[in-house]
Image (cartoon, rainbow, N blue to C red; front, side, top):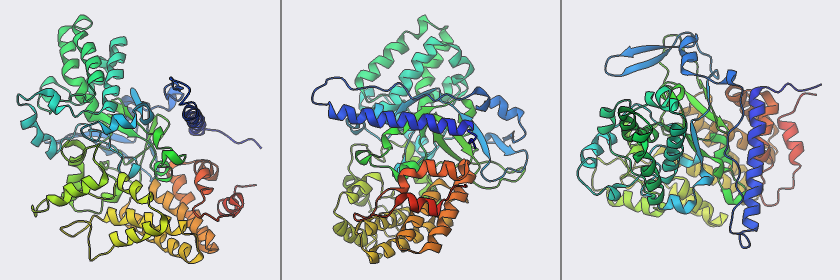
Length: 524
C-alpha cells in the first residue's frame, strides 16, 4: 500500500537531502583542506513549497482564526476569532533573506563585539525575537548611542546580520516592489521611529563598506524620499525583525558539529509582515529548512489574545525581573560579548555582585555546556555535582536560575549514561525523570524539548529493562510530537532516527532497530 506524502513530508525530504549534501561536502572539504584553496559550496537553502500552503498577512485577516483589535497604548493586537485547538497550525512562511550559520565562520563570530543583536539561540534552541515591541535596554541605550561618538567604536552589529542586510539590500535594488510592498511595513515604520533607536553599524569593516557603497547609490535608483527611508530604516528593520531558524529538538539532540551535529545548519532570516506582525501573537514556531511554521502550543479560547514567548520556555518559571533581564540581554550589547568564554562571563557576573539589585544572567549557556562535556565523564560528574551543591550556589547572591539547575541535571543524566554501568544508568533514568518533571511544570502543554526529553527517558528506561516505563514515555513522546508536527509515527521516526541509534554508553551493543520497533512500532 502506498504512503500518502503531504507537503510537510516533501519539505522534510528536501531538508534532509540538503543536510546530507551539506554534511558530505563539509567532510569532503575537510579531507581536501590541505590540497585545495577553494571550499565546495552548496546552493543557498531554499525549499520548494506550493504557494497555496504559504500564509500571507491578507490571508490571515481574511480567515476565520484571528482578528485585529487596537488597544490604547499598545497598538494593534491579534485575538482568536474562534476556539483554537492545541497543535493547530496557524502560519507557514518563507523568508525574504536567510543566512545560514555555516556561511559565517566561527572566527568571524568570535570577532563580533556582541552576540547577535536580534537572533539569539540559548542552549542551541529556537528562540523568536521582537518585532515592534521595545524594551528598557533599547530606551536606556538610545541616549548614549546618538551622541557624537566615533561610529566604529560602537560597531556592534554582527557579520551575520550584516550579510542579511546586504542580501536584502541587493534584492531591493533588483526588485523595488520588495521595499514598497513588504519591507516598508516592518518596524521601524517611519524615519522618525528609526532615528529614535540606537544606530546599527556592522562590525565587519569589509562587509560594512560594501553595504555603505550600495546605500550611497540608492538616490540614483529611487526617488529621494524612498532612498532616504531605505538608508535610514533598512538596517534597523533587519536588526529588529530577524528570527533564528531552527527546530529546538534537533538543536538539542545534535548540538556538536564536530561529532556530526546539525548546529551548522541553523540560520537567521528576515521574514515579511505575515510573520513580523505575528511575532507578538503566535505561540510556538519551528522550521523545516527555511520554511517557518507557527503552531498553538495550548488551547486558545475565542476572544483570547494570542501571545508569543520572546524567551526560552525554561525561563518562564523565573521572576518577572529576570525574564525582563533576559529580554534586555537580546538587545543590550553590553550584556554579553561573543568573544567571551564561559569563564569570563561568569567572572564578569560575579565581580559586579556588590549591587544587590543586579539581575544576574544564567551561567549554564551553550559554551559552558561544551566546556563541561569536554571533561572526562568521571571528572565531569564530580564537577556537575559540585555545581549542583545547594550550599554553594552558582549565583553569588544565592537564588540560582532554575534553568541552570535544569541544564546541569540534563548534563548529569548524559554523563551518568556515559559511565556505562547498570547502577549509573538507573541513576541517569532518575535524572531524566527529574528533567521531564521540570518540563511539565514550566513549559507549555506541548513543547518540542519535552518531546526530546521523553525520547531520552524512554531510551534510558529501555536500557534499564524497565519496559513499562519505556513504553509510557515512548507513547507520550509520539503523542506530543504528533500534536506539534503531525505525520504520526512515520514522521516521528524519520525525525528521530539518529537520536534512537545514538550510543550513550560505550559498550552499548543492543539492537537499535529492535528497540525502536518495540517502542515506536509502525502499523503493518
